[in-house]
Amino acid sequence: MDEIYNALRYSLVQQIQKIKSKYVSGCYPLDVLHCHTCLHLFIESVEAFDSEDFVSESQRTDILNIITKSIQTDFVKGVDISETLKLIRKQLQIDLKKARTFPQVPYRKPIDEKTWEYVWQNFEEELKYRKWFEYANEFPERFTYLCNSIGAQEENMYYIHKLSHRGACELSGKWFNEMFSYDNQYWIAKDFSWALFAEPNGYPEFYGNI
Image 1: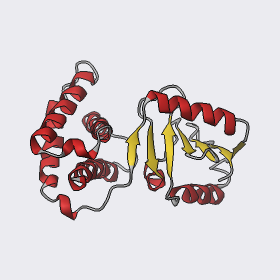
Image 2 (image 1 turned 90 degrees about the vertical axis):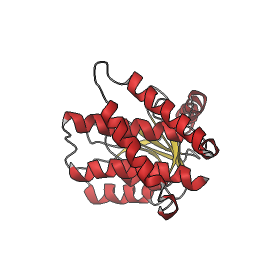
Image 3 (image 1 turned 30 degrees about the horizontal axis):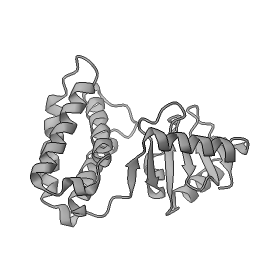
Image 4 (image 1 turned 120 degrees about the vertical axis):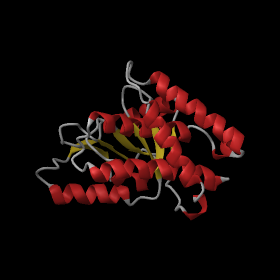
């Protein structure tokens, strides 16, 4: 069963990667931006379920229908993404037929508001006053080393925003180099020994010992 769940996630990750590889600058035409957003919403929704929830084909179809409808309903008012969602679903169906051939997608799971509050409480108690700066533009080699060190860690970590639990998740360190950008998010070690704030102007802040 896990191979089906893995295949769904792998397909969505690959669809995102296809867009990123085509638009390296990150400047997407509006329709591509909508697709990129839908794919991220889709994988976040899939990962909110347990792998067991996709046991039967009928149950899996029901869940994917619920996700599709939810994304369409909650998307920007007046924007029709029905065709985009159809294409995403079509690719999922194609890829599910090859589920056994896909490599394992690193662990990632959304966290709820209670866990988010727990993380912030511990961050403030353990790390808030152990801050130091790393100016990426002035010390590129040092900064690259630090990022690679984080990305090489096998342990899970938290990826969260200080204002809301939406989009927050617990994930494998293998996701770091894939997902890192100056997006105003915090990367926090599960044992609260270190944290990194991806300051949006390119001046990352580090806490603790990395």
